[in-house]
Length: 436
Ligand SMILES: Cc1cc2nc3c(=O)[nH]c(=O)nc-3n(C[C@H](O)[C@H](O)[C@H](O)COP(=O)(O)OP(=O)(O)OC[C@H]3O[C@@H](n4cnc5c(N)ncnc54)[C@H](O)[C@@H]3O)c2cc1C
Image (cartoon, rainbow, N blue to C red; front, side, top):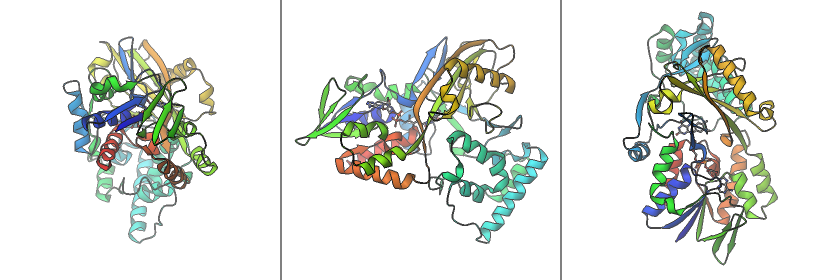
């Protein structure tokens, strides 16, 4: 059987490797001049940055975690997560509900009081099934934690009102914290949240792209880069795939490219399917990569819920993940800004975004006043986050059902159109192999 895999991001190269291991013939067709997709990393001026936003290796799934870690072999460093939320000028322990004792007293009272009221309401069965993400936040954490952190942060990262987002993806994912934990946190007894991420790995050399490169190593000869697939036709039971110049044939096609890129390749798409696909929401990302002289705070990353501090929703410190991604005596910081085309920030130049970010980071005290800037670069990723709006489930069902009728398999973050991390993409590739 001959397979064509559209897209050479993490999912595409993982599928290629697994198919090769199963004795199949598979070719990967990638639009860019190199593989990696959101997991690409760039090195310049002695710094290495993950240009699709800061990445770490973690998973609840032991098999998938070992798959990534084993491939990196000795090229990995282990780090303990030390993450904060920048709140009213304070660095509050993450997750927010574990750092309540660090809040100003009035805010601490608001958060615990509302949390306890919510627990009581839940026990009396007075909390209705959430109709949207905002309802879910309020019914799980109470109005205090919601107002102080969860709503502003989520509206910044999703660039969308929480009441217009679906709650389906949270159900079963984040339980309501036990009341004892909230009390412990409020009086200052240390508690650890999100423990599956409390220790993580990161490549010593080469940034997160090293994971994709290690996966791709045995299949390199079967990857075609610079091939932007523009047409996909079935003739006499065979797929003919083309980028407008070269044609490739295959018995089966797996798409890992965004649905918004796949549909135009298919010629006549029913209006209902096209409308559903056009309505699927996603966010784009600007990664602002800065290297400076001096040292970074001893943190992994920091969430920035408020708009006044800066446009970024998160800053991370790659030089704290690996000693080899910044020159001696230097540190690095990566700021992530989510946006949609047409937003004011989409009209700014890279230099303007860089200058604004450096100014904000100096004001926060993250880059010292005398910390000379040694590197600055800005990258944009069009498809960064799937946004689950209220029509998502209906729209995605229409698109998936039609593509399934065409016989095209969908695996990966923007092909399944799901919020999949690296481990989720690899698990999806494993599951695909089990099904086929
Ligand atoms: C800000 C941010 C931070 C993240 N942090 C983490 C983290 O810490 N840990 C973690 O596990 N995960 C993280 N992730 C998630 C991770 O990046 C993704 O799960 C993963 O990279 C998705 O891989 P993919 O191959 O499915 O998709 P992509 O990386 O999007 O790959 C799709 C590929 O298809 C190609 N393509 C598109 N159109 C065409 C076409 N017409 N023809 C041919 N090729 C085409 C693209 O160029 C791309 O290479 C993060 C994501 C973001 C946005």
